[in-house]
Length: 217
Image 1 (tube, helix red, strand yellow):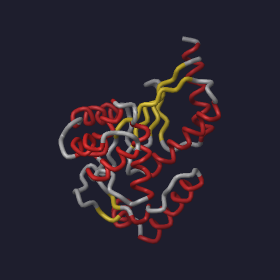
Image 2: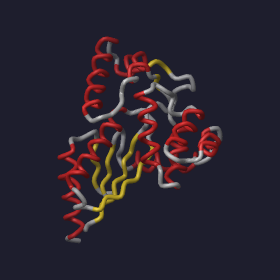
Image 3: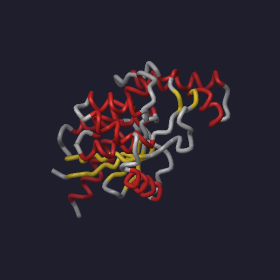
């Protein structure tokens, strides 16, 4: 069986990252063990300069994209529908605030050392889009860490410190230099970048192509 590494560049504040991951799950279900996939989450901050209190999401998106509130709300509702078709909880999406996620990425880096990064990523997607909670709030990070079987005290302590800051910044820089300017970004075996939440069949074809190339090397 051929092995393919996927670096999934993502932000917990990105709705399409949650959707993109679910589509990756669908792709892997289709492949049904045909390829041995190793998944590594990589950090990206959509709102690096956002102050701690954040900003109401529609207000933020209107300013960012130069559109009116009605258009942005309709766009968000379409994203919510796409997410819900995939079984994702986006019920709080319109009530959420735009937040900086650096603390979340630092706790996720720690979760990766405990082999629980995917579980915590999914819990934070649920917290943000389903429950409209701030995914970088130390108390939210504590709560979600406990939910996935991690030590809540450690998660909160990391969130309130600068632990893993260097690792996160280095990874962000590495993948920006690799050409990732928006998320999600799927980098296959460090060679191919697939941008956006592509349909599962696109991911299946790409993974098969890379696996075939690996077999012929």
